Image 1 (cartoon, rainbow, N blue to C red):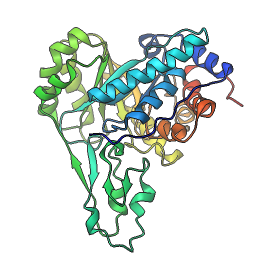
Image 2: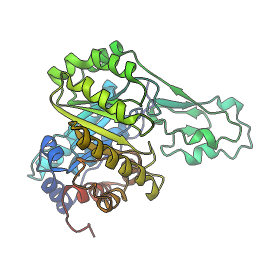
Image 3: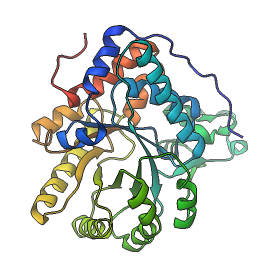
Image 4: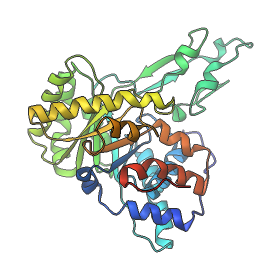
Length: 354
């Protein structure tokens, strides 16, 4: 079973911060996409730490995110819904409007770095090892006993850190039929497909299985992919494949530097550059869909977007590792204040919180 952890209860938030979150969250998720004010929280396609997912969902719902992206796991989805419900209980008690962000789950069409877990045999570790893997792990998933799977989201930083090269990454890919069986009964609004260029057959096969269900039950499909050779041809192929039947909202997630937003400000540049490239391609080829940044996004992203004339042209930004980092060890107002520091610059041009 999953390792039980203490759940941090967030019982009070300042009225000022709650009102700020309610004010900037007056748009529906669909309207935010069209206004260029869309924000998404990425819990992590492989993160199964249920107390952490619940806490993140509560804080970022109060901070007015439009979408919460999580692992395609029933227990994880329930944790997201519990966090959203807790946030709305807080808003209801304060007499503020309720918030219903889209719940999104991520799936992969083939091997992908977002869908993996670190693994090693702790009995092979020498007693005098300085254990750099523990220090570099952003979620404290590594201990003398090995890797706690629920806490690991597959960032891979521990792999080169191990001086004896004992750590490997276990990737996982479910069959399209298994994915559909898993997703069909989940109360989700959207699905994100992680893919890469030159993977036409796996993408088409996965979409053919999801297609009927997506057209009938989902509000949005997102496709996440990195830059690379032939990315323009692959984008056109994916557009033709999905738009054959899916006429609802379609989001192109530009995965600039995957799972690196908490590394530093410089990690934000690749996603902005890639988003600019995709925006130009969509316009040139007359392709539909919204562009949303991810992969290395952090507190420098909006500033760089403005400088590169991407702010307003793109639909918005998804925040993952950085969003998790800034609230993980905070409580109450500090966590909500930090979360609003990410959503406010996108939602509206208001002065920064003091």
